[in-house]
Length: 461
Ligand code: OOG
Ligand code: NI
Image (cartoon, rainbow, N blue to C red; front, top):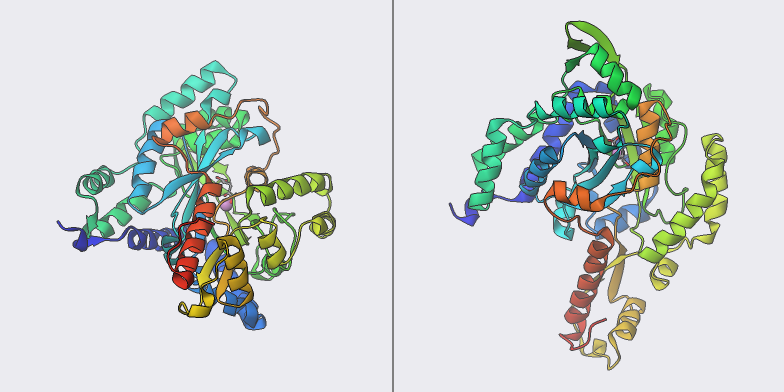
């Protein structure tokens, strides 16, 4: 089998993302309604804001918008997570970032599997927020052992998907028919099952410890618990939800509305309670799955992020007010955060991708250092700076999303030490530092833009 006849990772990811979206629409019809709402809002936003449409088109970001989603799953054991690392590698998705949710009382730690380079992201940026249950945070030793025993008995992967992953690893790719089969088999892992693997008493005991533990341990697999489309105007989408029969969570998480969106704003809504058949034929109920929308903005540098974290922390005391009051307080506090692209760029608060416009001409060859050359070329309109979209997640927002959908705000084991090393051991590889990825995209684009206009030079920017 030659590399030419392999299907690209991006194409497999694209097929997988759309198969998951179809499956979730069948499982949770409200998600289909949400897709329609977001598509309407996005079309209206682009029509009302031609500058935004032009900027997104120039940055090659319009095509991905209609397929853009993130999802979330929760697995029970390191062994499950290690196979997921290999499964997502088939689709060009690698674990990026470490999120410690235990600090917020949710007994998991997480990463996001996602594509990492600009081209792959522009085709389909599908990401999966993936959490590993921390059984070590269950206080009761008997219950902890019982949960581990239950998890040890399940296999969340089909035998065929395991074979196809191995085939990919040996051959270096999958052929057309195998790629389709891979997608069909892979989504089985994320399907909803209304039959629990345990009896009602066991479910209740685990749920009493933490609802999330019951959600992870009592089912055959890590059902996809939400899929999140990207909206260009989350305030409009939130306001329109009731018209579409959807009740959103009270507060929009993340930064306030701004002229230049930064990072990520999110809101979610509770899905209906589902009826569950427990072992021994008892009927019961469980809320597992919900809906969410998000608006993405520019990725921040460590300095920008530190400023964001400081301002967000200052706003937390207002979180119990209404969304309108909270957003007003947040907006006031965030006045300190520059809100125009040029200041964000000059003060190195956000990441940008540079692009040369046109070809080299004799007048562009300036005998200055790269930094001055870049600024001069930007001023002359010979280089464009595109804000780089934030592709990751925010721990405080994620904690808010988890909690609002678990129906409780347990303070939990806040003192438990975060353990990135333990998550990496389970993944079978280190997580990628998101800042390093954005910085690399920025530096590489700078180098190429300057090389294009000035020719290769000895110095780095
Ligand atoms: C994941 C919650 C986090 C987000 O968008 O921050 C998340 C979960 O509930 O499993 O999806
Ligand atoms: Ni989410």
